Image (cartoon, rainbow, N blue to C red; front, side, top):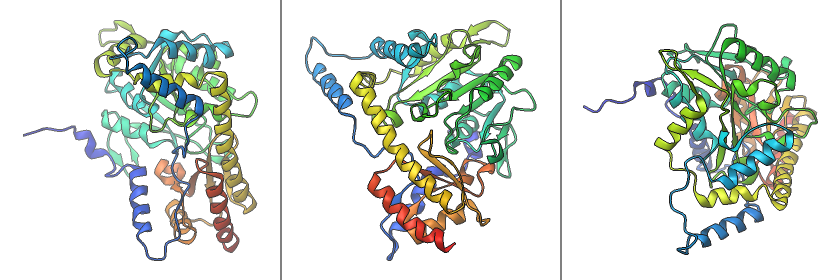
Length: 411
């Protein structure tokens, strides 16, 4: 008999975005269906920045000669990429992150799931509500979530994020071991100001908790004085791991490359109270279970830090922010509750009619041919909301707005 991980029994049968894809596939089979415009998914529509494409072509050419061929690379990532990340993403903002604290990976989503390997299985977990579903699902798979009771897991602390407080999370009332924080937030599009991050770091230090800070969308922040890194808060290096991605900044959703910062100041303890740095544990985990991101993808990622690459990142993120801003403006004019679309490519919209998330989703799909993501899929506090993405072409965004405006006027 092959025994399996019983924790999978506690997961929803289908991952949120897989479920949405199935509904959309069925919609496209309908006889009178409008051509579908997808505003639901956070995928980059392309193309790759020119600087990235050239660098990757050059990397491929290097692999065709004996003199410059690369086989297995360092599991932590090549020095050329780790060094430039330390310099550009942190050094230029006077944040003391050493290259040895940076680990290159095949994407933020993978690291979010894999970090559980180095933490105690009975660790308690807190997540923002609403939040990216992977935080909860990863905790379920690792056996940290407890039982599903109604729409919530018994072993997870849900930090309410409500519109009245600009979707800033409440602090846990009781001590928890791990706190997942995402800013700019997916799905709400809100960004945590410095004082909120300061409260989180203070809580984590007082309670000896670990913050896992997902800043995959930091390149979209345009408002001055909003923090782009948890390490802008004093003391955060003692309690916070930061995860970043090149997917939404460089179009790497299909190429796969990101990185995780594990400061050497963060100390954990074995059962006998022997101390060990999380940096040491993560390095040991990666050298055992990961052979490193590809040389080609890392060369492409490094190109994003050149003068040309940084200009292209700005142009790309500006383009998607423009789309999100147009969506935001349309819903605001119609009197719907809206956040995001300013420092985030996501727009979080609450309808004023009392419709559920799935009722709104179905109405906009069937009557407009526009797909969104039901907010209830991100947590109980997401009920009544939908999420729209600015990751599309300007042409498709304008078409979607034209269709949606007709429905909004009738409602």
